[in-house]
Image 1 (cartoon, one colour):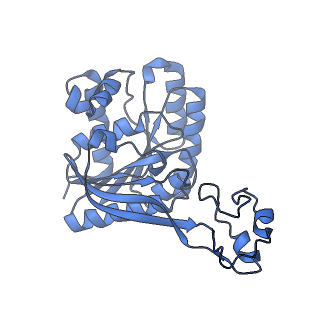
Image 2: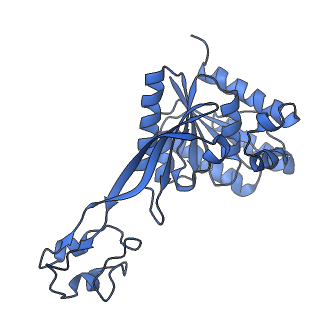
Image 3: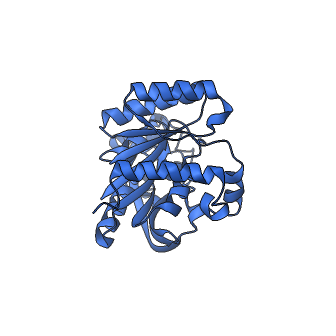
Length: 291
């Protein structure tokens, strides 16, 4: 079983649209949306939810007013201003640091686990999918990403699927770290700009740290040929394989508006041919369909 994680140094590079296009080409796979902070792969996959599970991560303080002596110490100590004058804790502002719990002289503050999101197992027209949704104002430390990946692996093993196709988070933070550990390969989607090259270098260094073999795809390469060449040269200098570039093409947006992948909307376009070529290289790199 192999796992390809599609990542980028920043949001908005076309990572999810490309992942959805790969889903239309891939066989014998499970989809995994690990971009739980801003999950939107489901907009193109239209998943039918089969299982729904709560995700508990972190703690929130809850004051028991029957025990509380209203000394106000908790409010004075709270660095997040999460406790109002009536000594009620705002669940949106509470960071779960536990200072109020530790110092409360009456032991009147409970500290239960907080339900901060959900994760789902669904069926799509391309195969099973594992995805998640964070609650309002909840932060993602990477634990929900780990849960989603673990469930995708479990599902792939149960159904004897050879590939996990993961839409990873952007950037280089904890969610990205949680998404690429033990991955068979990562595909870095980058735009041809100076900042895009810098973002690629940062996420490439992260992939190197976790020994995840990296490939690079330049999206909208024809908007700046000089930067495209600079990105390709930088990638090759870091021993990353540079796949075919994808031209700027409104077809991606048109397909998205229709809730379709690139190949459902316009399978004969030049861009579709490019993406097929990229996917063929990825299959070859991962050794898919060889058993």
